[in-house]
Amino acid sequence: DQQVKQNSPSLSVQEGRISILNCDYTNSMFDYFLWYKKYPAEGPTFLISISSIKDKNEDGRFTVFLNKSAKHLSLHIVPSQPGDSAVYFCAARRQTGANNLFFGTGTRLTVIP
Amino acid sequence: GAGVSQSPRYKVAKRGQDVALRCDPISGHVSLFWYQQALGQGPEFLTYFQNEAQLDKSGLPSDRFFAERPEGSVSTLKIQRTQQEDSAVYLCASTPSILNTEAFFGQGTRLTVV
Image 1: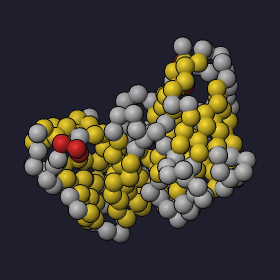
Image 2 (image 1 turned 60 degrees about the horizontal axis):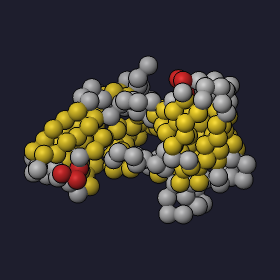
Image 3 (image 1 turned 180 degrees about the horizontal axis):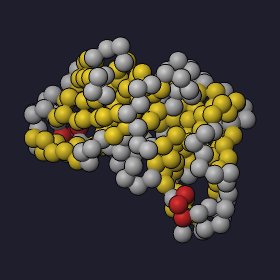
Image 4 (image 1 turned 90 degrees about the vertical axis):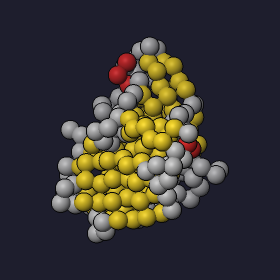
């Protein structure tokens, strides 16, 4: 069963506007959440993360919001740039275990110049 | 090297053939992970090493899959008697220590079984 879900396979946004990518999870044992960015023919690249004890983490144009009660997180990109066009994966880690990540199925973001 | 290196980048295998996929993690990284990414899906965990010790292999889909990291650096994922459902991108990732969660990924090996 998919414990991390990204229900939007794709998203198109105009350059300069805000991109909002969403992610839902089902496992209450997740304590750390990450966003990875993936370009074609490359491996995923770490973008930003958030601990379950926080509700917001910001890094430049990227902000991740966590709503634990709703088991929902989102990634905001402001302003969006054409170079942000990629597939974005949401991932989560359990409190115990091997420190491996559980990934969503990804959202393909296209930023239109 | 500067990043995680995987080889080969692409592998075509006939059904029933054995394959070996190599991962060179970032030098000094303690933790090493293998993931399998099917088309249109996110990466799924296969196995985890801490140095040379394989601490978790719960994600390996069958006993045809075997991984090793004998000297705590380079790792090999071996798939015996490949099947069509094994076709996927195999990703290797490493972290500096067991405390780090932000893993560095290689480019992956795309395996196609025909």
